[in-house]
Each structure stands twice: as C-alpha cells, then as structure tokens.
Image (cartoon, rainbow, N blue to C red; front, side, top):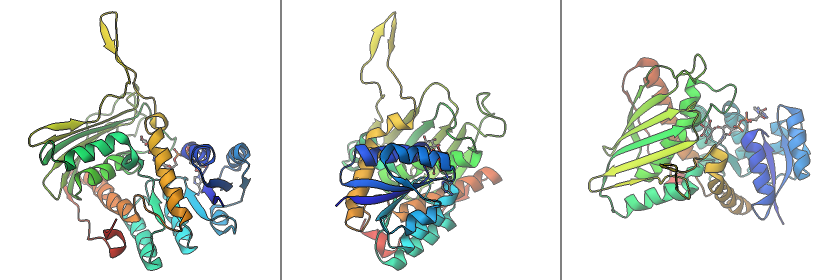
Length: 337
Ligand code: NAI
Ligand code: ISE
C-alpha cells in the first residue's frame, strides 16, 4: 500500500513537493492538503486528486494520513511538526525546522521523549551531487585538512513577499550553515556579521548583501555571502581551501560556448532548477523511511544546531560584535546518525 501523505502549505515548494510525491517518487500518494489561502489549496489539490481540509491540525489528525509534509512559512513549522510528533506520524519539515533554537529544542525534546526518529528536515543540499563530492573529497584527504571556506548564496530576487534581513540568515544562509557543518563534520564556535551598503537592487529595509564569518570548533574560518537580489542568476558557490589543495563546486553549465570572441555558459535561474535532483532524492529517502514508521535523513538535531548558529548570526548583526556559539552534545537518539 502507498504511504498516504498530508501536506501543509501549497505555495512554491509545497506545490513542487506535491508534484514530485505524485509523479516522481514511487510508493506514495498525497491524500490531503491545506493552506491558509483556501483557493491555492484547492487549485493544487485539484491537480493531484487530493482533498482539502480546513486546517493544518486537521491534516495531522486525519485518520487516512500516515505522514505529514510541512511546507508552510517558517514561523508555523514548530507547531505543526510538534503536532505530527505528538500523533506519532513521520514528518518532513522544510527548513528552517523552527525560526529559533528554542523552537527547535522543543521539537528535539518531543522527539527524544517519543524515543524514535520521526522528523526529517528539508536540508536538501545533503542529497546534492556537488555538495556530496565536496564532502567526499575532503573526507578522502585529497586536499589535506580544511583551513578556509568561501561560500556564496545568490538569488536573482528575494523569493517571498515577506522576506526580511533576518530571513536572509534563517531561510537562506541556513543552507550553507547546515551543509558546511555536515561537510566539515564540525559545529560552529563563533559568528561575525558584516555588510556593505545596501544594493540598489534590494528593497528598502532589506540588508542585502550580507557577509557572515563563522569559526568552527576545529579552527576553520568560513565566509558566507548572502545576496538575494543579485539579478544575474541563481548562483551557489563554495570553495574549500585545504592545506595542500582546494575543492570547489563546478560551474553549472553542461557546455561552454565559444563564439563571437567570448566563452559563455548558462547559469541556473532558481532553486527549483539547481536542486531538482536533490529534492527528488530527499523525498525518496523520506518516503522509504516514513513507510517504515521512522526518519533517516537530516535530523531535528541538525535543524537545532543550524538554528543555534543562525541565532548567533542574528545577534552578531544586531550587536555588531563577534558572538560565541555553543552547540551542546546531541542526545543519544541522534548520535548514531
Ligand atoms: P510560499 O510563500 O510560496 O508558500 C508558503 C505557503 O504556506 C503559502 O501558500 C501560505 O499561504 C501557506 N501558509 C503559511 N502559513 C500557513 C499556515 N499556518 N497554515 C497553512 N498554510 C500556511 O513559500 P515557499 O517558498 O514555498 O516556502 C515555504 C517553506 O519552504 C519555507 O519555510 C521556506 O524556507 C522553505 N523552502 C525551502 C526551499 C529549499 O530549498 N529547501 C526552497 C523554498 C522554500
Ligand atoms: C528559499 O526558501 C530556499 O530555501 C532556497 O533554497 C534559497 O535559495 C532561497 O534563498 C530561500 O528563500
């Protein structure tokens, strides 16, 4: 029998995940959806033959929903993920797991009390071939131990209407924070937040670009540029400098065109295109584990550790001073992962 899924939030990524759960991933069907925008929920439900239900908690409680996908706005993730854990249902929650470390900690506590893994966080970069190759190259010792990381996260324009300077950290840089914590196999120890003047491409009030400088507990220095109104393309860059070599994400274009005295290659336009295969694989992984009543992908602890770091980045930006980060030792439930 197929895993029967309920989806909370049918916006950009909710609709995209519903499409892949319906047409890409095997062994799963979307049976119920909800959105505070009822028309949007109805339109998306209609494309896959699912029913709409009035609220997120109705999705979690529905007797024909075996597992839950949370793709609503970040501030609502904690409540719905906690409800799914309380109902004993596996839950895929888009990042951020919660917008603060305190919110993530409540989810960690609930899952730990349940005594089994139920939560997967949507840190899809862990399924991306480029990010996996960065990690494998470093782990194989090919460039020696890491010293420095230069990363950039550039969007053509901020993705949602309510996008804020804080969200550039909690919604955008959180991807680099999780991916680098995983690639470097270490937690962060301190954050400093810097920024140039606001780009004229950014709306008034949005600090864009921002530069985060993170120190790991192992002495690696990481700089992350977040520029969400760069206009020219969706550009995810990462170079790790090791003691005896470097490794970097390759340019995305499959071919280089030499013509008219220039060499050119296409860039991606958005995250849907850049990470399409990674989203497919993270949901395949989630469906397989959820069918067995558990979760195996990025954990609630990963969501928590990322949020401890984003909290520190926000404090560093607010105060203008270097802010220490202390990620505690994970509970046993997460240690074997
Ligand atoms: P969106 O604004 O396009 O869609 C969010 C939808 O959730 C909207 O339709 C809104 O009406 C609905 N919603 C908000 N609060 C709700 C609530 N309490 N109950 C029911 N529905 C509610 O936003 P988008 O881009 O789809 O982002 C959604 C989440 O997914 C965010 O947390 C974002 O960070 C994450 N995301 C992750 C991506 C990734 O690369 N892993 C890419 C894009 C988004
Ligand atoms: C969005 O929520 C995502 O997660 C995308 O991957 C990221 O590129 C974008 O900046 C976020 O707003």
